[in-house]
Image 1 (cartoon, rainbow, N blue to C red):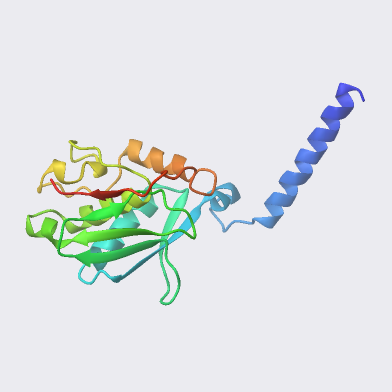
Image 2 (tube, rainbow, N blue to C red):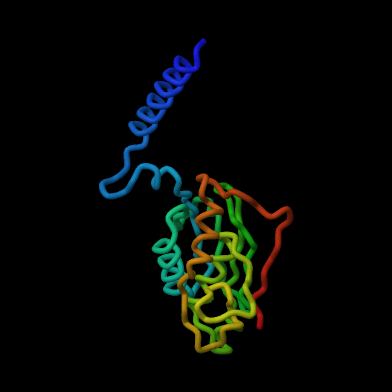
Length: 191
């Protein structure tokens, strides 16, 4: 078959696939279907994180406002969650992700850090960052969310910087977590 015929056939097939995909994934007004299709929804359960609800909500809102390939939502009671959040008396810690839909990681929001003066919202956003696949960047400045406790107790920044956002975007770019650690690692955020 001549090359021109192959190219026409390939172009027609591609157009058909794209048309069918567009019809199957209609997006809400103002949101592209590509962005909607690529976003991974991860549920979190904070039912055992009494006293941290406002900080968790603010941390979740920060991530949702700053990345588009993954979206965090509160799990409805009785349903499984990918991110289980609990309040503890120790130092904050979390399982290093990126968590995949249907899998589970744990975030422990420790009161020991709050007792020493660290900001609850920054702690929650930082630990969620671990669940999304970000390791600590210690020591680091306050502008790096993942610098954690090394930024000091005066730091209240709960917003991921451009590098942190980019890494999470890349981890969830294909609609699923693109990579997972070979072994489960727990990151403890003590100074």
